[in-house]
Length: 339
Image 1 (spheres, helix red, strand yellow):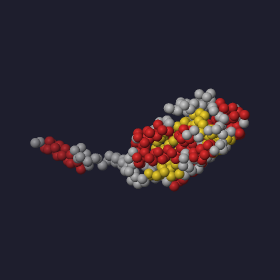
Image 2: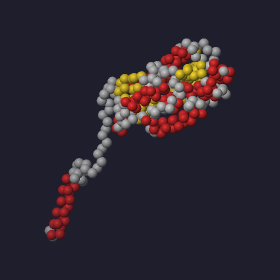
Image 3: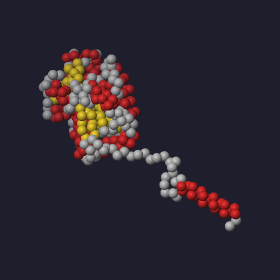
Image 4: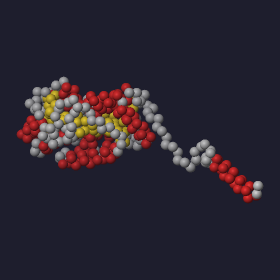
């Protein structure tokens, strides 16, 4: 073999050895210069708590407990799952506690919603839904306007006529100030052509307390999510006047506000979130778990039973929350609920 050929063969052999030593072609190992693969989350390895930032019996509480039931009954996780109640100011008290004390902890979750966004605006709180790590928008539901069973109100026209006569004489029970119940009550007063400052709104920290006030005749009307009052409506302890959604509920004969001649459409939503600062891997794992909950038997039965709208998604939630905050700020300011 000519000397030049021997030198070329030796050069190729040396190059092959160098590549093999560095994890190159034919080495069977990744090159050391390649980026490391993102570590997969082994979440969950210990107990999970879902905060319902309201008293027992309300929408936050019932949604959190159905989520808890789905996690365990559908065997989505094998760890213990609890629900804790931290009432106050439409969910902002519990949310502030979570943000302050549980940053970076994916085992401390919370159920927030449109009510929380409204309350943070009217209350001008430092804690914001936008500070949380959004996991999934889990559902949406219509508001329902109810009256005590013995009430003279039989239609939304009766309600608007009474508000036209004297809005201060029509006490309306609902959730925390600034929430969607309060917003709808203010819209009804505006529809009647009256000043929202004359609205006689009675806020409660939980749906159970509001229901007791309505059934007991302490107020003339009540507003809440349909699922919260469905049992009392079915038992004829309350009279359903109208729902706020643009479309009627399946298997429910309650008219919409628009069918009653009132051009108002309003739908509530709830969001499962984690504290700020959790890892991307844990966020991805929580979204996967939430999707399994939604697809499972327990959650699908709850959608049917509570007449929820299936608005589940894990996508574009940061934009969604920002848009809701912007539009709600404009609405609540126009209604005079932001001071």
